[in-house]
Length: 320
Image 1 (cartoon, rainbow, N blue to C red):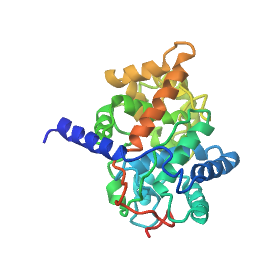
Image 2: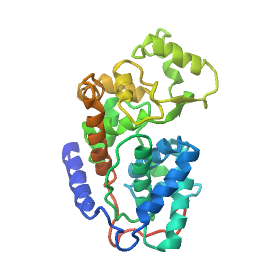
Image 3: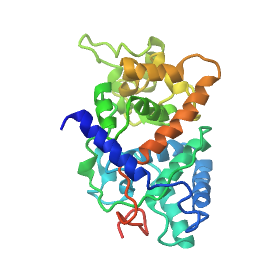
């Protein structure tokens, strides 16, 4: 079976399952579900706004391994959350808190996978980004293995590899760039990109795709042989606000992660970056705010379990 046919079949199956999700799934069985989740996210966000990108990333990592089934939430030495690409994930306590409240109100009704999808939406909204209606009705998966997280998108991936990993989930180039735009909020560690700053080329120079002014800033933040765990904003100048600044940074050679900056070098992904990060007055934010929810809804329908498949966990960190 060729790659295109395989990806088409995955997309068709994903769309078929996605059709079983619906907005307002809990309107009768647990009418206050979305309100409880929202208030929980707000409570944590008010104490620490950096929880917003944490929740968004948590949902993304969940969907890319076995689909959006809450498998990332399971605790245990061999569980998915302990895979190398997932070690820096945050926000588990937010989901656990919301689940505890929902179990007290509507026991055995709301899935952890749905809580995570709704919390990710609320995190974007609280960061001055768009809001949207999240189709719900997911059930929680019964498998969580760290070995299955080895194919997560990586900061080291060239566009060709990123494209392949997203296509395997039924997501195209436009979805790829749009979803990576989530990097408009959040931080990363020096250790994930400092190799770009020193001896990147065979002649011992830095990555030439980094603008010289930004290179100096990054080298000051991440000195050679310095603290690899030091946090650096992924969106220069606008790290706490969900906007199109990230795309302008990529356009201008100010992308922090190599995988982000490479989006400008591929003709297909470059056109999407340009559409979001160009200079067309106030239309840019409107376009991204319209396209991001569409991409999130599409991603959050990847390989979901519904109906008689999966379970509704009592506690999100362990199987029933």
